[in-house]
Length: 349
Image 1 (cartoon, rainbow, N blue to C red):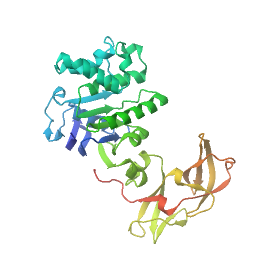
Image 2 (image 1 turned 120 degrees about the vertical axis):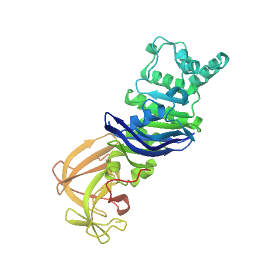
Image 3 (image 1 turned 90 degrees about the horizontal axis):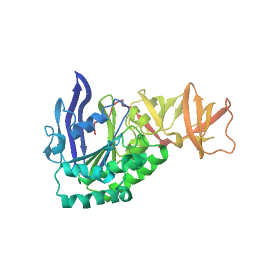
Image 4 (image 1 turned 135 degrees about the vertical axis):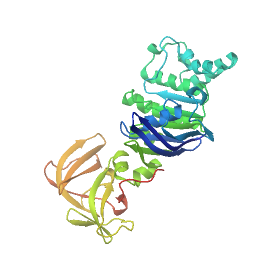
C-alpha cells in the first residue's frame, strides 16, 4: 500500500508549517523525508498518522482517502525517537499493546508477539522491563510493537537520533534487513541525518522551510543534484559561483571545462564538485590556492584550500606527507565529476 500527499498544507495559527506537499510513496518503497529542523518533514509524517489535520489537501493510503479518519482506523505502525514504551509493562506486553487495542483474538496475540520479537532480535528479552534494556534494545522493542500489527505502512520519526554512533550504525543495518524481509511494507522515514537517508531510502524527499525542494534516488541527489540546497544537504559539496562560457565556465579568473547543459553563455550559475572527487596536484581543471586547514580523519585527510577567496574542500586518502598550512597547493577535478546548477528550486517529485 502506497502513500500519497495531494497538495497537503498544514498551518498552526496562520503559520504554514507544511506548504502544498505533493508526494507519492510507492507500495513497498522506503521514502526518507530529509531536511533541517522546522522543514515540515515531521508534520508530513504526522499528517499520514492522523495526528494533525491538513488545512487543505488530502492524504491517501493506497486508494483510500484517510484525511478524515482517526489514527486508530488507519492501520499504520509508528516508531518515534523517544521509544514511547510503557515502563510498567514487560517487553511482550508492550509489543502486544497494539494488538489488544485492535481486539485481535487472544489465541493470535502470542504468536504475533513472538514473531515480531524474533524479527527484531528481541525474542530473549520478552520478560524484561524497558528499564532493563539498552537504548538500542528499547528501540527494537518499539519497532517490534509497530510490526506486530502487520501494518501496510510504517512511519519512522527520527528513530535513531537518541542512539550513539555505534548503536545507530547497527540499527541501520537491522532496519535494512527488516525491509528486505518485509518488502511489501511502505516506509516513510523522517530524519535530518543524510547518512541514514542515503543508507536506507529508495528515494529521498528533501525539504526546507515547509516545502519540498527535491526528490529522487540517493544516487541521483548525490551525483547530480538539481539545486544548491540539495547539493549542500545531501552530502558535502563545493559550491562555486561561476559564469557560463563557451564549453565551460569561468571561475577565479580561469576557465574550467565542464558540461554546461546548454546554459546560455554569460549566465551565472553554481558549480557543484564533491570533495572526494577533488585531487591533489596537476590534472584537468586545475585550481591553485593556499592551504587554510588540514584535518586528519583516520583513513583520509580533508584539506581546506582558499582559492581566490573561496574555500574548497578536498577529501584525500591518508597522505604520508600532507601539505603545509599556509603554503600554495594545486587541486584538480575531472570535467565529468562536476554538476552545473542553474536553478535555485527544483520540481516537487
